Image (spheres, rainbow, N blue to C red):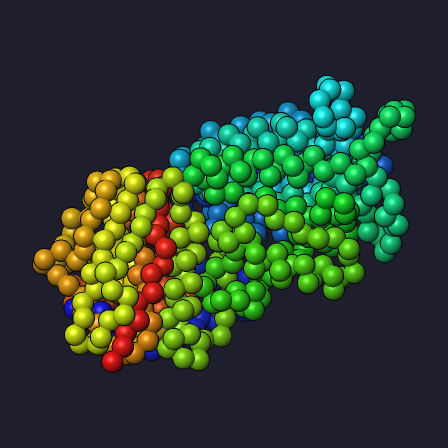
Length: 471
């Protein structure tokens, strides 16, 4: 087979005008879970917040855009979001997931601070004020999320509340906007209370993310406002949640056309919408900002083959960003400049762990995704830790043009995958698919979702290697 697989189909674009259409067209992961919590009506009425029901509905749609099936979404509302209710829900979701599954946790309600009476360097204790007016402390949330992160392959938390202490009291009420910061009356009795500028919640989140990534997990913590700002609720929903969801529907959010939206793309889009709404709050993202979170609405087709190939390579990069750092994979090509009809691809793959090896390829014409290995000539893709040289003697890949850029990435997975679900066409002994929006989604789902064995497991991925085809 030649290095560039041919295709009889032309590049096409699947138009998506609404988020619902995108969700209906996109397959979902079979092992994703979501816990959505919202409190609009508190035990103490002065703490009530408007529009939280709309936040819960919006969070449900955000979870679906990530790929969480409806049956795996659990919602807690108002009095269900008690101290015991939150603790139990977090424990239950940890018990439900398997290693490598993805989890989305969402909270909309008040944040708060109380004096720290336990000593130490922290001036105050921060956390989420739940229905029964108790503080679900940042350290307790950190412990619960830490247990999830140790088990899950991907953990995302969206916290639409604020912990800015005294900044909330300085925020003037306007147009029915309510600051999402609750301060108990008892705090006023403490003359030594100096929590107004504390940022303990964000510090806890940073510690949690670092710990999760050190164990090979991927985590993103999304805060509705910066450390010294206030998050707002309105009758139409909270500003950050509204903005984040709105960006899921816009083709322009997918700035590199990879077919998915990471935290960085969504944050940039959502921040512009928040400013346009007149809010002075800054969405803060801690963790891997490049981690793909949601399927993207289709964007305009690329103008040239090189642009198309680079867009398809961005899809491979999205897969790499979702990989576990616990499995180190390296791909080294003996030559990255290949003469058309003369040179063959030759490379070494090194893996730190045994697993199933796959080689994904983007054609230099920008029209195809291909599975170079395994193939009809060589199905033995289980490899031990160490170095493997490919192609094997039974097959090879020769550059045949057009002049341009092709891309290759190696994936090593604990669980056996079936890429033929995504790459359904045949080009000689190799599976292939026209590189359109549907193929982007299917390829990413197969790479990061449940494998042929029925389990998710973990996977590692190499850097995406560019190979230039030259005359």
